[in-house]
Amino acid sequence: MRFSLLTLEETETLLGLGFLGVSLAFGLTVVTMAYAVGHISGGHFNPAVSFGLLAGKRFNGSDLLPYIVAQVLGAIAAGGVLLIIASGNADFSLSGANPLATNGYGTHSPGGYSLFSALVTEIVMTFMFLLVIMGATDRLAPAGFGPVAIGLA
Image 1: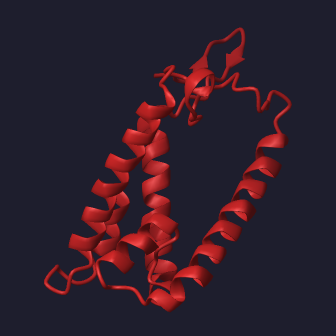
Image 2: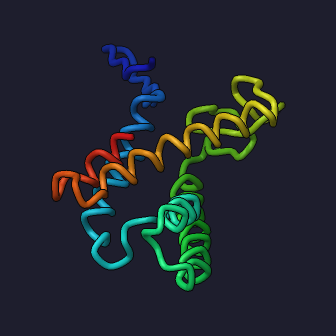
């Protein structure tokens, strides 16, 4: 974990949100967006969620393709915005010099994980995420708290 260090001689900022900070930023963004536009789109911003809701018979199959197109275009636009923001820092590099919130497999993985390990992780964690979504949005679940449970997942 990194912290800001302030001395009388110099100021050195060590920007280190760590895994917890990145996780909370992502989760709170999901919570905020689910409350903000969930009533419009159902609040699923990820194709895996759309497929999961379709499999759970909570989503109309004819809406799947337009949703996926919108989700992919939204992801590309968001990535572009992040690139513009990050490019404002002279030290920014796409080379992986700062492994915070980077992912990948093989040589692109900060932990050196293989493609198979990354695939298994994605499948298991997506399943768990969808399990929380299906439970939190069930008609028997407490009303109004779904986005909080989903964001914390």
